[in-house]
Image 1 (cartoon, one colour):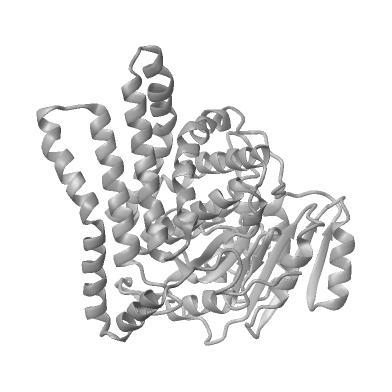
Image 2 (cartoon, rainbow, N blue to C red):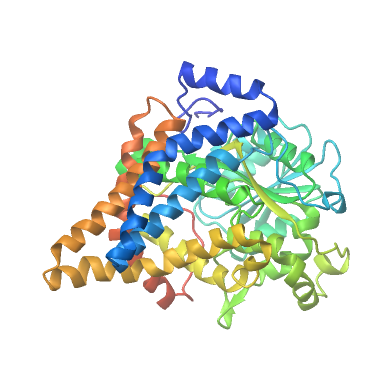
Length: 487
């Protein structure tokens, strides 16, 4: 079995000597000077895009075009994300956050070395579960409780887990009836005694120091109710589709989540590595397990919905607890509803097996679209309360996702049928340009790594294929099967 460690393996960043020296010099500066220098360097790097944006903005009033307006909006959004990710983001596991709540003392402090309950739910992952569990047992944090729940697997997974339970210090819970991921994880939480509840997925491998970095971030910043790690693909050797997803994952975490983290409002602490303060989620686990949408149980939105309970409990927490007042998770200990922040630590690394076949990839994307739809009806109700910047990031992204199918129909179907081929080419050119910008950001973080060229492919895949999935996900919202196979 291959054990991946930070700095090695398929997802490891490639660092040049010059970049290392630059990072060392920046870290040696006074924090305020360092921030100003980083902002200046970021603006210089974004200067070509800013000039392009300014040129388009000057021309727009003289020749108004909805397509040009849309292109400028996308370009402006991309510039803002890059600026926030590279000039405003601080890794909470590495250095103190520059932006802290006014009343940080209102948040209860964690012990200097809190106990961690490391929790996993698994169903039918016989081929990969041993690597996942061994990576969980191999973390370098000294006080960890390992709990693994087998959600009625029928492929030999229970036999592997029984063997591991006899060898490793873990608590194994076997369910006779399939409850789904959320229900299985709540069963694990029922026996968890940690100050921090940390989740991973059954197709993941965590770095040995990942738990320590998550805990460091939470201990240093009591206002953080949750923090997520940095995820890359584990199986990049499985083909082009896997490599494309790997580069896309890097951007989603390094840029998108870093931009949200600058305002303490990461809207999805992703399942591969998700650490929660016990006080921030304990009372909401029944609502999570029994989540219903459109009158039926909803088995998706596991990561987004639990993060939503942390972000929104100051406004909706009491109603959720009252709805499940008879549950021991609520009855036995009523934690106060606080305006927690949610962060992201790039130092805590995890690798996940991504789908390597088109069919599995599309099914995964449909599940994610369903999660997006469901979460929009919960998190969308309060994100405007978390400040204008956090709200702009959230609602701007939501609007872009919702508008994508309409734009695709107009540019890839309507335009060719009405002999407006140049409009289609212009649209595809803009998509490729955006992908190249994200690819160059990857190249900046990983000098010498040629994988950045995969990023424009992901942009084309998103507009030509994935955008069509949102209407389908909406029409099939009630269908759901809990599976993590990446085949």
